[in-house]
Image (cartoon, rainbow, N blue to C red; front, side):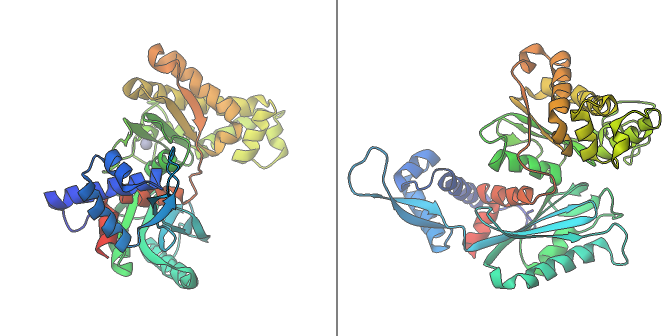
Length: 405
Ligand SMILES: [Zn+2]
C-alpha cells in the first residue's frame, strides 16, 4: 500500500534495483559482489552502493565462503540478515483470527489463534486493533525491530488503500483496516485477499516454486483462484481476485450472497457441499455417513472407503470446478493446477475428477501435460501474510522504508 503517492522516477529505479539485489542475495547467498553485479545486470559501483546501504541498515551481512571451483582463500559473500527483524502476519477467517510473529526469513517466532465471533457488541475494526495491541503486549519481550503488518482475509477489498469493502461472515462496510492499523502502530500495513496471498506464498515458498504459469484453485467456504502467468501474479497489484466462485454454473440455482443466482460457490463451496450431502443422506439410509456426525473429514473418509453417496458429492464438486478450470486452461496455458482445499484429504477422488474435466473440455495441446497437485500450505495459516512481506521486500517498496530507517 503506497499512501504517500507514487515515488519519482529516480526513486522508483532505486527501489526496483534495491529489491532485485535483495532478492538475489536471498535466493543465491552467499554471493559475491561480482556475481551479484552480473546476475542483477547492474554496474559494480551501483552494487557497492546498494550493498553498503543494506549493510549499514543490518539487512545483509558479509560472510566468508568457498567459491565453487576455487582453491584459494575464502571469498567474501553476502547473505541476508533476517533474525533482528520481525513482522506480524495475520489471517482473519470465519470466527477466528491467527496472529504470527515471524522474522524476515519468514521463520515463525510465535503464533496464536484468537476467537473473532461474527456477532459482538464492539465493531470488527476495534476488535482487530485490540487483538493486535494485546498480542504485541503479550510478546513484547520477544519483539525485535518490527517491519510491517500483513493481513490476509476473504472479501472484497481495495488493496492500495487498505479498505475492506465487504467480507463473508462479518457484517462490515468499507472498513478502513489498513489506515487504522498504520495510524495505531506506525508500521506499513499490507492487506490482500487470502487466496491471492496464498497463491503468492505457494510461488515463493511452496508447491509452485520455479513454475512460471500456475492456476491455483481454492475450494473452501469460498471458491476462488489465483493465477501466476509468466512468473507474475495476475492482478497482483490491484488485489482483484479471479472470481471463479461467482461464475454462473446453474441459471436456475440458489441465490448467492453476491446477488446473482447459481454461482459456482453455491454448489462447490464446502458449506454448500455439506448441505447437499445432508439432503441426500435422507434418501440414502445405507450410507456410512449416518455413522458419524457429518463433517468435511467424515465425508472425505467415507468417500475413501468407497461410500457411493460421499464419492458422488465430491466428484460432483470436482466436475463443477473442473468445468470452469478447463476454460481457464485455454486462457492461460498453465503447467500446473494447484488445489487448495480441506477436500484434499480425499484428493485421490477429487483431483482425478477435476483433471478429467480439464482433459475433456480444454484444448488437448494445452491440457495433456498439466498436473493437478495439492497446495503446500493451508488457507488458515499465516504464510500467505509472510509472502506479502517477502513480496514487498522483493519489489523494493518495504525495503526502501527499512533502508531509510
Ligand atoms: Zn455469487
